[in-house]
Amino acid sequence: MYGRDTSGRAQDALSASALTFLRAMDRNRNRVAAECGLTGSELRAVARVAEAGSITPKLLALSMEMTTGAVTAISNRLVALQLLTRGAHPHDRRSLLLTLTPAAEQLTQKIYDDFEALIAHSVREIGPEEQSRLGAMLTAMALTVDADADLSLTA
Image (cartoon, rainbow, N blue to C red; front, side, top):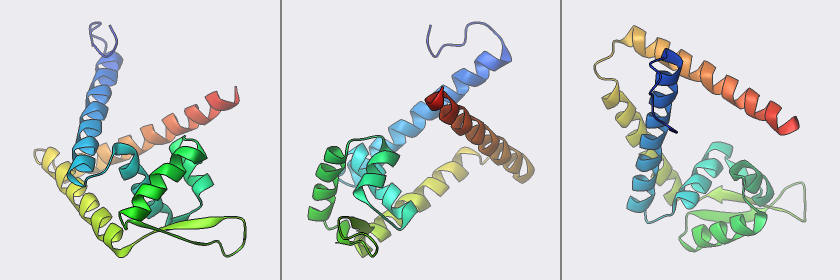
């Protein structure tokens, strides 16, 4: 059955644990979004703009795997909530840049601070060396998953 470790193999147990962790992170993101009065997609958009500094709607749509129409609707709402601004693109008159407002910058900083506290709390029983090792393993796994995903798109 999907998501259940019934084989007893360590690899299956790791997959089940990863799935459990991802589901917990999804629930946390949905809780944070609701507390902020946003949908999960709106919160993702704010986070992507924060990571980029500024981004075109087209690139935001690509990064979120959404249509530009969906991103337009999301950005319209975020502009109305005074979380995003639209500005002229310095190199392309046909495009524009989405940027966080100061209110959104404060919001994203709080979200990231809360996330760091959540992770710190979840590993409170693990020593600093083990935390470093776990961080390195998670990074290596993420890079492998990303590389494999990129390969599967071209195959």
